[in-house]
Length: 383
Image 1: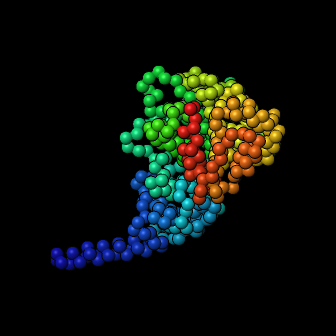
Image 2: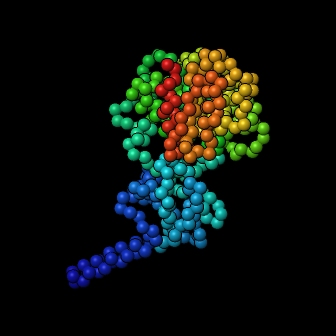
Image 3: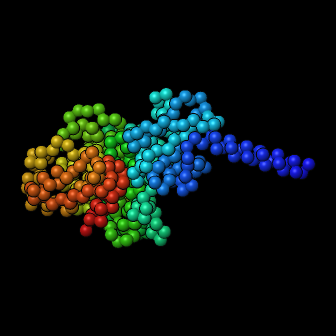
């Protein structure tokens, strides 16, 4: 009787193992691990050592399911019990948005954390770098600052607005005043992008702890570029997309930050930088308000159709005056980026403007390019 019971249990176990094998129409290698962006308690998404991503979705009534990531759609394979599986080609290291698709409708994978991008909430996955990415990861023994969520009222637009504010680790322990960096995200993203996708707080903490950067406050606002771009006149200095933010920045946000935080309020202690369209906004705001800012940076900055001799009332034509007012100017872009700033950098340098240009090798229009840009830019500020 005991032997028969044992055999029954053993046969049942083999049956379960066989069923599990049938449920997995793709091969998942032993070195695959749960992605850091996966919601705890889920086995997928996973990533293997070659940078391939593995996805699973339960959709028992679906006829066709796909994963849309990095500009390519992957058809998912049906398994048992209504589950679907897919594996991607090797993906570039860094952060990537992705969506699931059923019946032509894209939606967020419930097994992943969500991020605001592509003008909406989106799924996201991190393909990890090696130790070279430690600069944007939290480190033991490093004092950590805070990222605060704040609301303030903007008289310019008669509305409550939201921003994120980074304060360095030492902020709570004294009465010292700090310089401020206003840091903008790109088109279709929001004020949480730099802290969620960009890991700016870890970049700042690590640079400050290594004494490579001075402690500073960093302010991140939506910039009114969460909604889709709908065209219009968007030449330098005359931008319509996100232009409603300009008066808010000057008349409401800067005064609010200066009144609520221990800031140094002169232009020599105020910087602005932005990625993609946030770089476009940075140019418009800084070079139309030279009395407010002394440091400027762009990361894959969307600077299109600019005439350097006439832009911003000819601000670049007097190099000596410009170089006295702007203490440091930096522009970066990815080697595979569809937005490059090399020609602008060269044009400015030919006019005598002091500007540092740097290409991020092996990256495109993506957060890894912008993380590298922030790391390179911040150590030059307020010194």
